[in-house]
Amino acid sequence: MKNFKQIRPIMSGAFLASILMLLSGCGEWFGGKKGHGCPACGTSAVESAAPEDVLFSLDGKPVITKQRLDDFFDIYLKSRQDGVYAAMDPQAKRHAFNELVQMEVLKHQVKKQKLDQDPKYIKNFERACDLAMYTVNAEILGNQVLESIDVSDAGLEKFYSENTGKNPAFDNPPFLKTPEGIKMKAVIFTDEKSAKDFLAKAEKPGADFNALAKAAKKDIKDLGVVTSQTVFSQDVQKALKSAAYSIKGKAKTLQPNAAELVSAHGGPYVVVYGVGPRQAGAYATFAEVIAAQPDFKEKLANYKKQVEGQSEFMKRIDQWKKDLNATENTKFFEEEEARKKAELEAKFKELQEAQAKEEGAEKGKAEEAAPVKAAETKSV
Image (cartoon, rainbow, N blue to C red; front, side):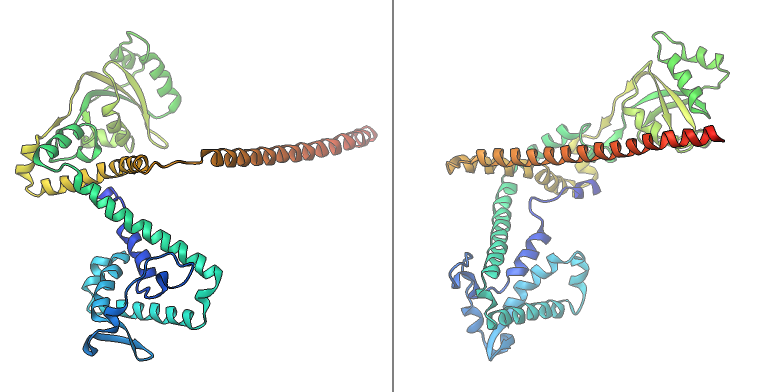
């Protein structure tokens, strides 16, 4: 089931956490001053906290309470790549508290120096706020999309049936019973030229692979039915060396009565020949997989959400744009792209002219030196 973990959710939790950490405990900064576009964060809960719940104060005013630390701690763990292990650390909450303290000290120091009134600061703050708002909105609406995806038994069975044989995530047991493959014969060469010469003959219509091998005084190795999961016998493995991996890769592409050249770096060079008919892949039914792995249904539901979530999310955005009568100034981008293209063409032309000029100068020097060299040769 490890393949299912390769799909990313619509919005990265770590990314969201990092943004929220940046803006955590914003207090009166949000919306408190002209030019700050973020909504206000209430501080009354902190200020009215019971003394025993206050963990950190500045100038006698409560800043960090147990509740606020608990809220921040969840974000802190999500922002850590080792979040699972960090949570097991007895001092994990103390580390989170230390970060929260640093954030508060920096925030109040900036405010004390009135750096938050600087236009550059306000601009950067609004950028961070915009990004945070986008991230939170995308997560909330993205979760709506994920919840709308059909993960009923019927929906999961349909998804499973449609993906077997097409999605590599299901090309392993217990889903795959019998891999797709083809019976192969092989002739092994130590040099590339001989292998290519043999292949050219084997590719001709009506070519007799066995007769060609006999004429070339080469033994034919019967590889049996080769699939992506074939384990070659020791003697065959030794002869094929690292080319064996490439040969298994041909199990899905090599056609009956067709030959292909497979090689590894430095040899050997193997001409493989397909002998029909092809063996089709056989997959376990949805019911069989459920019986073998009771937790498969839950994992498949999560995987289905991840696979379908992104495309469905973009469809929703397109629909919301229509509902909001959105208009786009495409002319701006066309002009911008045309300008960039013209700049690149001008730069390229400039480089060509400089190169031509340099080559011309070198040619002139060579022509000037030629008579002198000829005279020196003649005198000798």
